[in-house]
Amino acid sequence: MTETALTLPDGRTLRYYDTGPVDAPLTVVWHHGTPNLGTPPEPLLPAAARLGIRFVSYDRPGYGGSTPRPGRDVASAAADTAALATALGIDRFAALGHSGGGPHALACAALLPDRVLAAASIAGLAPYGADGLDWYAGMTASGVASLQAAAAGRTAKEHHQQAHGADYDPEFTPADLAALHGPWSWLDTVVGPALAAGPAALIDDDLAYTAPWGFTPDRIRTPVLLLHGDRDRIVPSSHSRWLADRIPGAELWTRPDDGHISVLTSTEDALTRLHDLADR
Image (cartoon, rainbow, N blue to C red; front, side, top):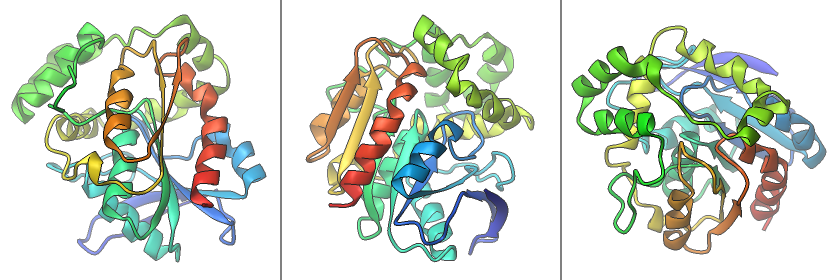
């Protein structure tokens, strides 16, 4: 895997990762969660090799080696992804995101319809204030408090993060903990380093999730797969159910016994399905 930096047209740096090979039949752009670095998901690399998939990914602005961009919205991921793909000579690609990466993958599907072949959101959020969705219902108490602070604006979120950031409890299920001690222990390698420079990028993410995204999911015409665990209390599965009802033709896969992390044990199947959707 190569890791290097791209200078964007506006002068920002985007740190990106590329597993190659450049002649792979399909490129999948990985959109990471919050707070993570953008390295491609190591547990999926064997399946990617089997399917002929090249993973390309990047640190969202403010994380790792990417220049911060305060005030960014979810939609901005589409322009950054397009710039990276163009720089690498990639015309068309699929998008895959987990957790906070889910909305960013959907942004690419909505805003880059001529380039994105298919998209998948795993345990991803629905838009804040979505009509017909109780957005906070089923979330952990600490998650609700954190996101309500973000919805109140940057100052409130910064104060909350300083006072209560260490108190955040994801309330992982036993299945989540088993996944974290198994193949998805890889997450430990992308969470800690993502926070090494402080919480600024996490704050920017949460502000983006609780503000207008810059697109509406109902405009997506690209094939979309939504995967969610029904025991998820970080992002309740009602979010993916809402999205499935609004994105034309979207496929919804639910896992009744999975939480926010253990649902990742189904991502090899999801990657295979994404490959098939992109090949239509």
